[in-house]
Image 1 (tube, rainbow, N blue to C red):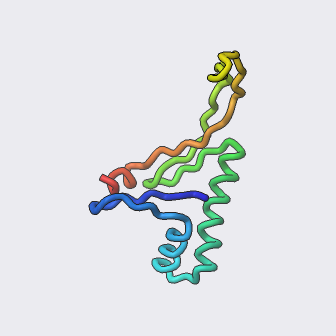
Image 2: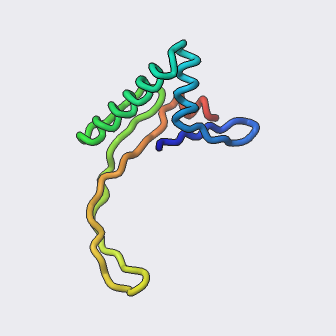
Length: 104
């Protein structure tokens, strides 16, 4: 499940996917079913683009990219044996100016 963090002046609280769907339904005057489809569609589109190695740039909000982590050598903490850690791809997000300004 994807979890969003909403920080307020009163303290931090967690906004989950259901909360996001409810807010989209309320602000866009949609049914919860339609709002769920819309939110899931956005997440699916971002996921598909990233899985193809594409960048997703939402001007003012932020940019989703894929970072490549090279293979490396590590150690098993129990035995001290050397192990190979395979190369991986990691999703990254960099907040845009408007989002940074809204948070600050």
